Length: 155
Length: 219
Length: 223
Image 1 (cartoon, rainbow over the protein chains, first blue to last red):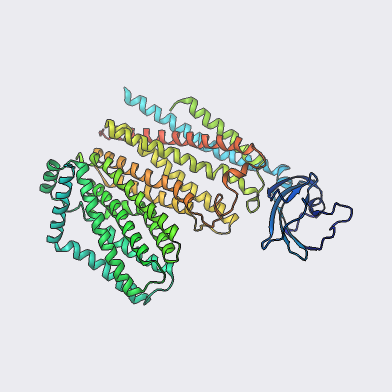
Image 2 (tube, rainbow over the protein chains, first blue to last red; image 1 turned 180 degrees about the vertical axis):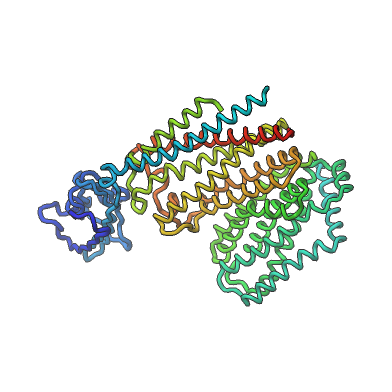
């Protein structure tokens, strides 16, 4: 995921009690570090903590055996990559007697961080200041006029 | 309890006046029947619950607004003086609201019966829908009565009472319509919740009306 | 209106404007950067609520004291609140167009907002239809109280009771308003000053409007 362009990236993996990525513990389900391209930080939105946990490097692990059930287990993890891109990961895990299917949807949340922050944002702020300043100036002008009228009537 | 006697007397008096004025009841019946016939001719029976409920409540709204907006309008000066000396304002508004609530409740149920006969009934729980119709008509009528009072004090007649009343009646009608749809589609628990909401709205309207009407009546 | 309040309003606004664009915000799907509209659209609705509350308080004060000033202040506050409401709906529609691809949607809070605007437009019609100033004051006070209780309170209660499928934040599985602070608390630092700024500016506008109307009435020989 080196390029920022793809809005959606869908991966479907079937796993039959085999490690997905070589070299990692056998109960690893998803390695977000690899998937999102280097994770700086992440935040778990929705996760059944009795069955799963997310390690410090952004690896989704299962704690022991996952009981099979009719509906999938849903896990939401929002992560920020080392490049500063935000990715919203939805993971659905079906566990049946035969095996396990992991379905991952990784959506890049486009923010205007890099592009705007290098100068163009100040134009926006300046414009808003000018607009607000003119409204403020008109308010002050009105206020002065009204105060003048009120003083005149008092006499 | 003796405070209730003037209210009850006035309610009976209003009923007698209503019977004397042919325009009142017959007018309400006419409005409902004509709009029902138009709806029937246009659609020939409706199968979807939402559409059915929507038509029903538009027709009921029409009839409730019409009858409740006439409640304060026909007061001649003589009658106003009589009321001023005889009832205190809280009793008057309670009497008028209760009268309008019962009247519209009954006319709403009658309208529902005719609607039921003409347009069929795509759903279940007829009794629950009738309860919702009753609660909704009563709540809308209470609001309409108070707005008629406001309009009559301002001196500008029934048109203004509709303008004032309709925005405020929208939550009542929404609750009634949603509740009816739930009832027809089998969601009894939600329908009861909406009935409770309608009763609360009704109570709120009557309480606020009772508190605020004396200020209007000072004219 | 006290000068320090006006200065606070302006200072708060000067803080909010740059921070709204520069500050860190919570990153949410669907919303992306438009979440910054929170500082403008939502804060305006809060300010409108406060202004309407003040209008109702002045209405109640009028009914107790029969002081015409209270009625005029109530009217000015309602005028500004109506303006805020219309702008609130406009900003909401713009926001909706960009995030949900539609200008309007079937959502209880949107309905409630539209009905509130209708009710207060009816209030304006009511006021302009009565010429006797004492009658007008009493009737508007009564209707204003009624409208406030029935409408604004029901916008708060009714949507909470229904579990509706809607995109409006807080309903149907969307992260509620409280969850926007999940990544950083910095949003609160801009949000609350924004409410303060809009409310105080609203009071300032109402104050000016009230004084102009008061002067007009005096110069016309009435009052």
